[in-house]
Amino acid sequence: MNKESKPNEKSARPSARPGNYGTHSGGTRSASHKPVSRAALARRKKQKRKAILLRIILLLAVIGMIIAAVVLVNRRRKADRPAETNTEQASAEAVQETSEGEIAAEKEETAEESPEETEETASEEASDRPADLPDINVEDWEFILANPWNSVEDYTPEVGTIEGIQLDTRIIPAMEQFVADCRAAGNTVFLSSGYRDYDTQTFLFNRKVEQYGDEDVAATIVARPGTSEHQTGLAADITDQYYETKNESLEYTAMYQWMFAHCQEYGFILRFPKGRDDVTGIIYEPWHFRYVGVEAATYIMEHELTLEEFLACYKDIAGPEKTE
Ligand SMILES: [Zn+2]
Image 1 (spheres, rainbow, N blue to C red):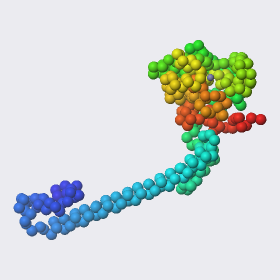
Image 2 (image 1 turned 90 degrees about the vertical axis):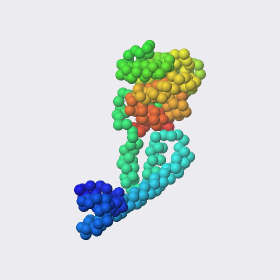
Image 3 (image 1 turned 45 degrees about the horizontal axis):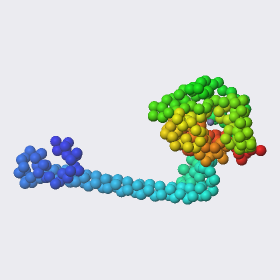
Image 4 (image 1 turned 180 degrees about the vertical axis):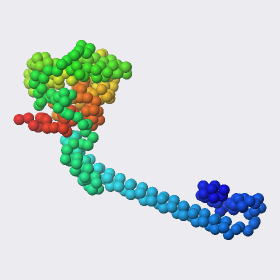
């Protein structure tokens, strides 16, 4: 019985309770005064040794853990330091927060780290893409690009009607859900403009040219025919039912704020973000949402990219610096 029950209690200082051993050998409490047999003594010694050994092992384990923790903390510190200096460098150099710049900063950062991590960077360099970039085919219909430097020419999607506007039939279910959920959150949504064919775009553009007397100025407000995203059928202008004005102030509506926060869940992005007209060619439009699918939309919105910057991660595209 002793042999079976004691091992579990070993750590509870068996030697501190000698009386219990006596009990085992058949005696009563007074048995502790009896002379202890040699065998019992030997057993006790053995158990003591075992207990000491166990403590030593425990102590070694604790020391090992402390050393491991210290090493980890030091590694972290080392890893953080180059990152800080990099951010400063990056902000000094970069005029805009392009994804390319981000990749470059990451490369510099990892270059100073351990050899394992450098290997990772090398494979990243080979594909020249951020590792977390969605695995998509940018030649698919969701990624068609219409901007001042990329004309879709006579691209004509199959369109359907939703609340008085037309959209590519393939995105109507997503738009329906987007609008329905925004309304369910207590907002008043108005679909103001969807698909526009080439002729309509020509009409709108010419009207702006008349208004401003300058084609280039007009082109910053209304896209030239063939370069409007509305011609793709993948974009919609969405305003508040009680606030239809299409200007920057729309961003203060609860409706816009809900849409901006949730659009990616339905596959939409805010296509012309604030202060990015140098990349998109179009002024800030807190009403124009574009479909790209959930995966791409999530990436674009999380990284605060424009569609141009996102596509540039996959392929060469014409931009303002590449014209002529
Ligand atoms: Zn629009």
